Length: 494
Image 1 (spheres, one colour):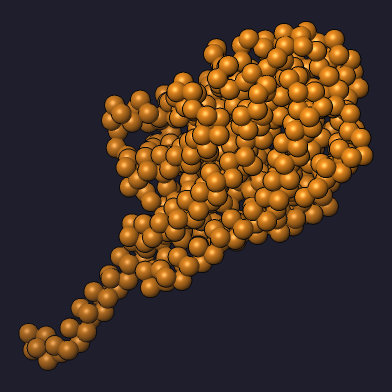
Image 2 (image 1 turned 120 degrees about the vertical axis):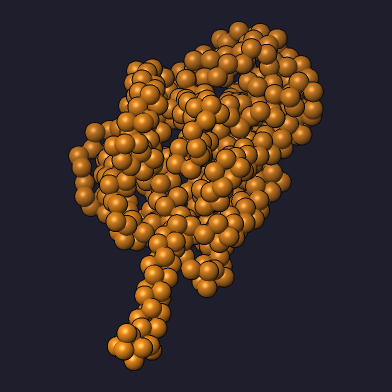
């Protein structure tokens, strides 16, 4: 007792030190998990940047309605449409498109609705994540991806790999942060079906994500029915690769592995996607300091991705590169945003500003690289339609030799529905289809049935099957549009 009362300050000091140590321990523990308040700020930054990008895409809808999207507008406008190539995620961002056609809205309006639909899809997934899991960091990664990962693919709104990638983040959030329920049991298989039955690369995305989703043996045993469902569907998906998928795989030329190419591609990719490179560095730092690294073992698939790039011999500006590297970039984007949201509130303003700069950086790069090129392409297609109309008013079906367009950058492609779509977009009557053809295709077109429309070497449509509210095609043979010097000068004018 004497000793106790003679050292009251020492006891109090020890108590305070113990309390301070406990506070630091708790503080260190809690900061490992995202702060919801700070995650909301990061989500808001991503939301604003995403909205700006999508408003741009909606205003310049014609830039996004080229290539495969023009085929969509032809196919979806008519009856009897079916999802092609076992890629059911293909229809996920088109739920407003069918009602727009049913209401016979003008093609210009339908085109804008297509772009609005794409924006709503990502917003819907992001807000579903928030509503079901309260994970604003997961939702933020869904909205950040179009600015940091997609690159030029932003203009190709038919890319189902990105649609199903967003679903995978939703799936991950539900598994990890929502309690078991009938709703959860019903939603997870639906999400996984659309994830697997989309782009074949999503199988590799799953390989990267599954160790993170199910990081322990206990969780694997608990999720065994779901994992069996995944395995069966993956096997079926790989067994039922479409002709298109097989054609793309046949593009691999069998080049020997070249480490110099890998290094060069990595450097070029980091330069091409500079903003994403910073995000990846943040994610790797987060993973390096983690005590449980097994859940990140999926990133070991990276060498396989580089081998695929090597076999295709892609460069950093190639559209396919973003798809092939998508498994690792999507995963690292999610991990980096999770880590960013764990930072101290004192750094909140700086981190939010840095995130805004990165997103603006990605936005600016996408526009500066592709806007002018795609705008020029739209104008050339429209001018070609005008030339056809001037050449023979009342004639609908035309072809032009592909070599005639070789001197015009980014125009000689084998998409034969673009002139048809843009003719309907401009309200021309009759509607004009101009096919770019070369070699044996020219002979095919010259003998093509008058009552049918050529789409590609494997597909055609009866003129009667096209929706008369949008397409007024006069039957007849395909006529050649000969591009003389005067016409070429007109096409090249800016």
